Image (tube, rainbow, N blue to C red; front, side):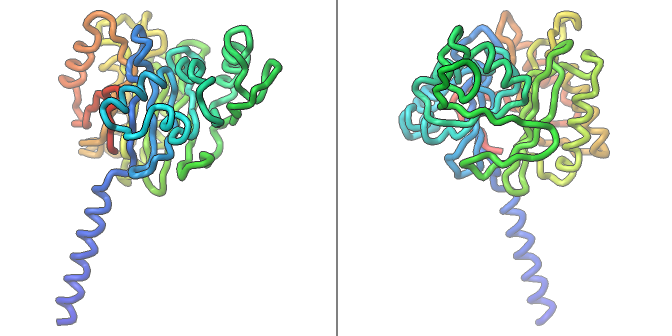
Length: 318
C-alpha cells in the first residue's frame, strides 16, 4: 500500500507539472506587424505575462490604430484611451527608424507618464531627431528645453538584466547589426522562469559580416534546451529573390532558416526546435512579398518550428 501511495503521489505530481507547463506564460497583442508602406500597421507588440494587464510595448511604429483594432476585435474590453494610459507601462525601442517608433511620438500628447527603455544609440536619435522641438514637442526628460518630462529615458546596456518598473517583467538586451554601421536591438523578456525573445530589424551574420546573431543564439540556447523560451519574434522583410546587395540589413526566409540552423546546432540538434513558436515580423507588403515569404517559409521549415504570422489586434498566447 505504501508503494502504491507513493506511485499515485508521483503520478499526480507529474500531471500537475505537465498541466502547469502547458499553460501560456505570455500574452502578446500586435499593434502593428508590417515593415513599411502601411503607416497604420507598423512594428509594435504589446507583451505581458498571461493574465496580467501590465504590458510593455516592443517597438512602437503604430500605437493608436493598433489599439483601435484590438478593441474592435474585443482583445481589449476597455476603451483605447484606458489601454494606452493604464495598461501600457513602458516602451522598448529597438532602433531609431520611423517604422519602429512613429506611433509613440505621434501619440505622446495623449499618453500617460512612461519610461522609454533603449540603448544609448537609440535614445540619442529620439533626443536629437524626434523629441527636439524642430520635429515634435519634447515630451522627454532630456534634450532641448523646455522639457515636458512625460517620458523618462532609461538607458540599457548589454551587461545586466533590468527590472521593468510597474511590471513583473525583466529584460536583457543584445545588439544587432541592421546594415553597415547601424545597430538595432534584441530584447529577451523574462517573467519568472519563462522567456520571450523579440528582435528588432536585423541582417544575417553572413551578409552583415558580423557575429551579433551568433552571440544571441549562444545566449538563448540553454533556454531553448530547458524549454523556457516560449517564442522568437524575428523579421523576414523580403522574399528569397531579393538580391543580397539590396537587403539593407534585413532577412529573407532562406537567411532566417540558416540562422535557425545555427541555433539548432548550438542546442544539440534533433527535434529541439520543433513546435517552438517563430513569430514572423516586419514583412514588407510591396507587390507579392507577403504571399511569397509565407510560401517560402512553409516550404523550407526543416526544424518544424511553429510558424506564426501575427495579425494586428489579435492576441497571441505563448
